[in-house]
Length: 257
Image (cartoon, rainbow, N blue to C red):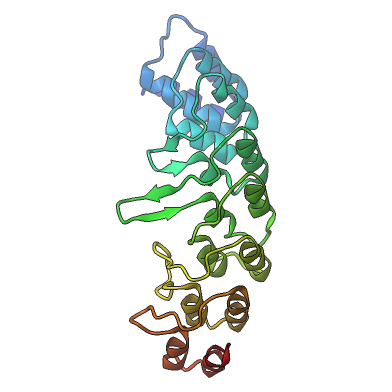
C-alpha cells in the first residue's frame, strides 16, 4: 500500500476522513484493489458511513474485515448499505464465524440481524478441533437474559452447549436467572459439553459438581437432570462429588428421588 494512502486511512481512523476523501475523488490517483478493500474495512471500523458508502458504490467487495469493522463499530447504517449490494447476512467471517454470533455483544445489532432474517441457529466453528458456538451459547455468557429472550422470540433453539455457557461464563453476576430461562425453554440437561473449556463438562451435573455450585446442582435436578448419569470416567455426579470431597453435594445427589 502506498504511504500516502496508508496515512490518509490512519487519519480517517482517527476521525479525520478528509484526506482519504480527496484521494478517492482524485481521478489522477487510482487506488489499487488492495487499497480499496483496506479503505472499506477501515471506514467500516471507524464508522465513516460516507466513505464506506462511496466505496460500496464503486463495487469494492465486502470483505470479512469490513464486516467485522461494521459489527464492532455498531454501525447499522453501514450494514444497511451492505444489503444493497447482495450481501448474504448469513455469510461467514473468515469462513468460520457467523455475523450474528459476532453481533450478540451489541443488543441493538442483534435485534437488527434477527429482524433482517439472520439464522438464529447458525453454528460458528473454530479451528479444526470441532469446537463451535451458537448465538444462544454466546447470549448465555451474559448475566442479562434480554439477548437470549430476543433469540428465543425469533425462533432460536437451545443447543446442548448453551447450558454449559450459562454455568461457566466468566462474567460476574447471578447465573441462576439465565439457567432458569434455559430450563423453561427445554434446555438439554443431560447432554455432553463437547467443546467447552471445563474438564467437568461431561454433563451439566458433572460440571456443577466440578464447580462446587450447590445452587446449580439443585436447579438442574429440579429441572430433570439425571443424578445417576455415568460419565467423566464412568463416574456419576455423586461419585465425582465424593471423590472431590464435596460431601454436601454428594448427599444431595444420593438422596435425590
